[in-house]
Image (tube, rainbow, N blue to C red; front, side, top):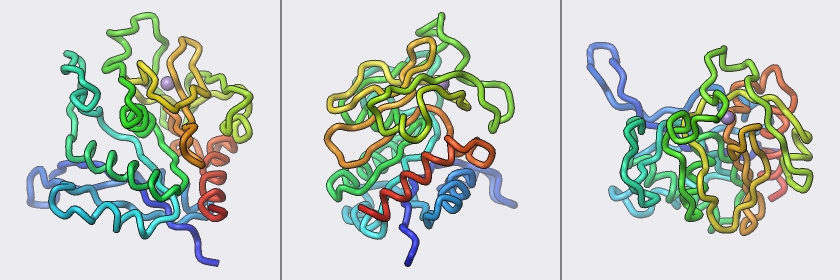
Length: 245
Ligand SMILES: [Mn+2]
């Protein structure tokens, strides 16, 4: 049987590329590729592009896919949720915001499973009408450290998972997770349930009530998947759902 095709949203990055300075690339971190492959899926990066270039591109990208993975990345433009930029906001990529919002809309229309990670949970919350903390350390000074300094595969802070969630069946009620984010869900969007929280109350997981399978986490299971069974279980459940529909 052919593997399910997992469409993965991609980022924009400019790098010095041989003799070409600051050449823009569309990229996806290899951690996602490897986690999806090991879970039995076929990873397919969905090239970031200006959605105004060709109206049909997003629908045609998603028509090739059995599931959508919204990957991590840079800050979302606060204009997408009606706020002005906070002084600690990092660089944004409005073309990526527009591409991923279109991908999410199309994936919902098609009813295919959606896994959202880090920036992905933030994108989902904004798409559902919610807002974000633009910078946790300055807006929530009592919060714990969410941008860990240790290696990316090492767990950092704890997360408590709701017993009534899909996530609970995959990772259990309490896990230690890798954490690299300075933004987080603030006001929750409509049709979303909070299913996981950090000890400081930061929302670390949501699931949608208006879609067959949409699981979103603020942490990085792709960074710890090789050594941590609960992390890999998230990818395995997602890929299995993409097979069964
Ligand atoms: Mn965190």
